[in-house]
Length: 126
Image 1 (cartoon, rainbow, N blue to C red):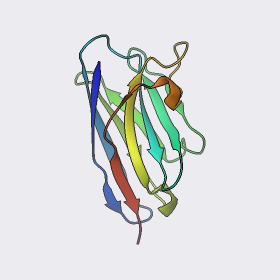
Image 2 (cartoon, helix red, strand yellow):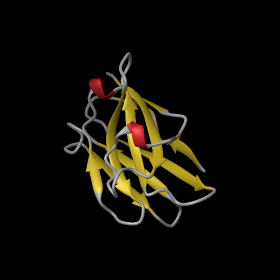
Image 3 (cartoon, rainbow, N blue to C red):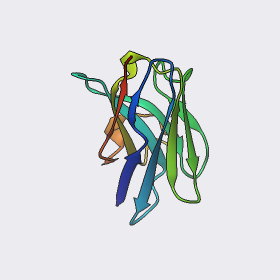
Image 4 (cartoon, rainbow, N blue to C red):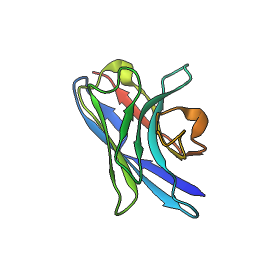
């Protein structure tokens, strides 16, 4: 029902910034939530942030709120992730996701996000 395409990944030095974008194409009902996840090398997928599509409530994963900001442009169904003060430990594949969330909330729990983008590599190194 939803196709997601990420862009904006790449390589950056420590302390730098990147903004990821994800365009959601909806074929049926509009999902309640859009979210960002990341998968560090050798680790499982972790939630970064989620946002409501009809509302504007935002939900952040652990240790994400200080440097990462999720936002959306409802006119073109695009969700963004602004990443500031990037650190080498932020190196990961970042995924955009869509789903209904749980109980009206959009916490970035991968179990309730059935639609996924292809992933965007973010590498932070000197």
